[in-house]
Every structure is written in structure tokens, then in C-alpha cells.
Amino acid sequence: LACPTASLYERECIADVWRALDDPDKIVLAQTAPSIQVTLGELFGMPPGTVVTGKLVAALRRLGFDKVFATDFSADLTIIEEAHEFLERLEAGGPFPMLTSCCPGWIKFCEHFYPEFLGHLSTCKSPHQMFGALAKTYFAAKHSYDPRKVVVVAIMPCVAKKFEASRPEMGTDQFRDVDYVLTTRELGRMIRQAGIDFGSLPDEDYDQPLGIASGAGTIFGATGGVMEAAVRTAYAVTHPDERGLIDMAELRGQSGIKEAWVDLGRWQVRVGVAHGLGNARRLLELVKAGEAFHYLEIMACPGGCVGGSGQPILAGHDQAALSLDYRHNRADALYRIDFSRTIRRSHENPQAKKIYEEFLGRPLGPTAMKLLHTTYTPRSPVPTRYDPQLFPSIFPRS
Ligand code: SF4
Image (tube, rainbow, N blue to C red):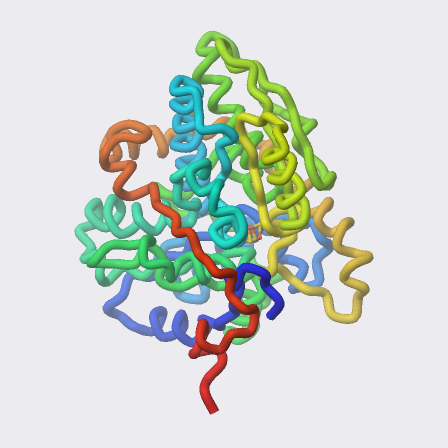
């Protein structure tokens, strides 16, 4: 692999997940990242941008998962926490720009190459890690499950999420937040191994209570989507009597760097978005040279998670030529889902509200900080890409 931050290493988890599904003692939960519902169909001959949410849920049930939930739900929690963190920073006067933290490829890049920005990162865990932490606490307690018997499998667009789930800070002494990460491609292989005819599956709904999501939670999968979702909630908090500012066209599309000004009541705020690490570097260098931003979204993959390293690769096609169209079609599908939802702002998700009432208390409160937030590590010197000492399990000694 040629990952500049060594956060990408593809260790296949399929055998581990089959073992967990075969173990009658385990309660195995699936959570699916927002972008999976618009990319999985490509592995079964469907055009890019086909929305297969219902078939995705049905396939996971037929594979044997006890519950199938949506990471879009915990993306709403990420936004609620992160928007409040941003408003707190506005009150405190910084540090700016605040930087999003939901992309583990970007986090590792920052830890290695821009450690001076670590204090700018939001402390929010990424949505699938938040989901895992709540599955092993809130969900397990509600159903009187022993958290050690709950296995969380995250279906992600991304091999960097495998590394993220293994970070020591992503869990407690008792449990890991997320036990296994399967990429979209790995899930496709499991569906084939099980002999499931994906195209003829019926549409089924996510399980509750962790399956309800706003449109804002769903657009997380596209570049600009995290910022747009955060701005929707920050705007609602600072304009309690208005219902405006839902769509932010300036933050959508495949331009490498995007920006917008947002009216947040007492504050006029400049936000920016970069996708792809080359653009991330350009944007951070602009900030170092004096460009003033208040809040930046950075995603490591071109197009954001719809262009992630675990997404379908179409054999026999010119990947470079097709990728822009593919990213566009996949992102467009996420925005269509968002537009079709009655709830399009994270803080209006009724289950998110309930979780705060019953368990978390308030955004940035003690329980939320303990379970939903994390810390970062300056990492230097920069690792050699192929250093066998770093990953002995991938580069076994001969
Ligand atoms: Fe993973 Fe890429 Fe999405 Fe970052 S942008 S979370 S590296 S798929």
C-alpha cells in the first residue's frame, strides 16, 4: 500500500465476522455508514448512485446479524456534539479554525504532518466509534446484555477505519467500541459467499432505536456534507425562531477546496472544505500563511467517503476517468435521500433527543465527553511507508 500516513492497511475481517455470526453466545450488531447505501449496488451490477438502503438491511439480516442499525444515526450525534463544541469555541474566542475529526485518514495525516493543528481538532469521535460506544453501554443496558457479548461490526467505505477501531483510545478496559470493520467490498464478498441474490431482496427497514437518522446524518458521506450538517445545527441554535438555512450549495460538488460565509447570530463565520490530502495540505498551508477560517472540514479521500478506499472498484474500467462521475453520482444520491427526509437537521432526530434525555444528559456533558470524545497523538518521525517494524502482522518476518 502507498498510504502516506500508514493509517491504511487492509486486513480482511470476513473470517472473524463469520465466526462471530456463528457463535450463539454473541449478539452481533451491524452498523452501516451513510455512503454504503449508494455504492453497494455497484458490486451487483447496478449503476452508480443507485440507492439500495432496504436491500442492504435485508442482506445483513440474511447473513445472520441480530440487529442492523445506521451509522447515520450516530452521525447525527457527532453533529450535535461538534456543533456545540464549535459554538463553545466561538464564545471562548478559539482556537480557530476548528477542524473536523470524523475521517481517520485525515486524523493520522494531521498527527504526522501537522501536529501543530492537533489542538484545533474537534474532540468528537467519528460516528461509527460513537455508535460502538453507545451500543456497548446504552443499548446493552437497555436490553440487559453483557457488553462483552455484544459484537459491533461496522460496514464502512474505508480501510482507515480498521486502523481507527484499533486505536487504544477507542474503547475502555472492558470493551472495544467497534470489534470489526468490513469495507463495502468485503460485505459484497460475504453476500456472494452466502449465495444471496442481492438484486431480488425485498426492501427492509433498519432496526430501532439506533436506526433513525436525519438527512444531515446521511450527507456525511459526501465532501462538504459534514460541514453542511454542522452548520444546519449551529444555525438553528443561534436562530431559534427561524427554520432557514438547510441547503448549502457552496459546500457541495467536487471542487478541491470550497468555502462559505455563515451568519451565526453574533458571529459571521467563514467555513471551508477540502477533500483529498493534497487539497488538505493546500488549505492548511493557506491557514499557516494567515488565511482566517473559523471551521474546516477535511476528508482524506477525493469526494469524501463516496470515494473511499473500501468502495467498489470496477474491474476493466479506467478508474481515473470514471471516478469523478462516480463520485458525483454517489454524492448526488445521498443528497436525494437527504431531500426526501422529513427530518433534515441532526438535533431534530427524535432518537438522538431521547438518548440525551435518558442517558447522555447534555451535549458536551460528562457522559458524552467520556463516551463520545477522544484525544490525539503527535506522531513523529513520519513512518517509512513500508517499514515492516510498524505492521509485523502484515509484513511477517521471513
Ligand atoms: Fe475513510 Fe476516506 Fe471517508 Fe476519510 S474520507 S472516513 S479515509 S472513506
